[in-house]
Image 1 (cartoon, rainbow, N blue to C red):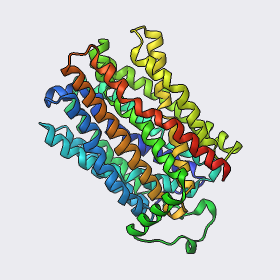
Image 2: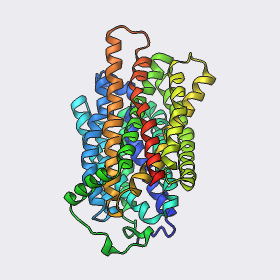
Image 3: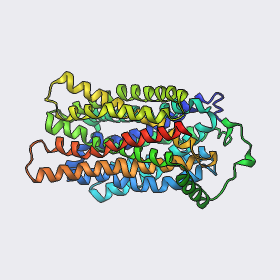
Length: 418
C-alpha cells in the first residue's frame, strides 16, 4: 500500500508533519539549554557548538550527498532511513554525560536529518505547479515553527517529570512511527509538474550533480545571491538559539516559563510568518519574476530595527512580547521564496542538489556560524565584566544578517530583467 497524494497537497501535508518531527528533535536541546549546560558543565560557546557547528557540519556535508541521492534513488526510502537514524540518536542524547558524548550523538543526528529536506522539496517540486511552489515550500517549512514550538512546549510539559534526559528518550522513540509511515509514500515522477519525459532528465552520479551545480553557480548570479542572502538571514536565527537562556539570565524567567512562552510565540508567530511569506512571495512573483526576492529584501529592511528594539527595550511586557512575536514571524518568512527560487534557476534533475546547497549555506554558515559567534561573544563579554553580556553578544552576532537585504534585492532585480 502507498500514499498516492493525488493532488500534491496530501503529499505536502505528510512531508510537513515529518518536518515538524525533524525540528522538534533538533531544537529540544535549545529548550533545555540551562539544564544541559549545568549537568554537562558547558560554557556558552560549547553549548552553541552542540546546537550549531557539531550538528551542522555533518548535516550539510552529508546533505550534499543526500541531495544527489534524492535525484537518483527512491526518496521515500531515503527519508525513512534518515528518520530512523536521527530518532535513535536523539534518544541516545539523553544518555550523554559530557560534551564529547553529546557531540557524537549530535553528529549522527545531523547525518540522519540531512536526508529529509532535499528529498521532500524535490518531491514537492515534482508534484506542484510553478506558481504554487513558493506556498508549498512555505507550508513545508511550517515544520520549523511548529516543530520548534512543540519542542519548547514538550520540554515544559515533560521536563518537570522526566527531566531533559527522559524527554529526549521519549521524543526519539516517536520517530520510528514516522519512518514506517514514510515507507508508504509514492515517489512522484521527476519533472512531473513540467510534464517532462524521463529522456530529458539524465540520471548521473554525485560527480555529475556537483559539476552541474558548479556550472549553475557560474551561470546564475541569482543562485549565488540567494545562497548568500539565505546564510545571512539564518545567521541571525543562529544566535536566537540562546534566547531561552537569555530570558532566564537577564530577564528573570524560570526555565519552564521561558520554554512555554517561547514555544507559544514560535507556534503562532512562526506559522503566521510562514504563511505570509509563502503567499506574499507568490503574489510578488505573479507581478514580477524577481518579486519573491525583492519581497524578502523589503521585509528584512523593516525587521532590522525591530530586532534591535527587542534586545534593548526595558522589560515592558507589551512592547517586549510584541517584538518577540514579530521576530518569530519574520524568521519563517524567507523559506518559501528561497527554496522555490533556487530550484527554479537550475535544471529539474538538479533540484535536490540545489536544495542541499542552500541548506549548506543556511546551516553551516548561517545557523552554525550565528550560534557560535553569539556563544563566543557572550563568553568574551562575561570575562570582561560587561553588563548584560548576553544582550550585547546577541546584538553584535546579528549584524551580519544585514547582508541579506542587498543580496535579495539584487537577486530580484536580476530575475526581473531576465
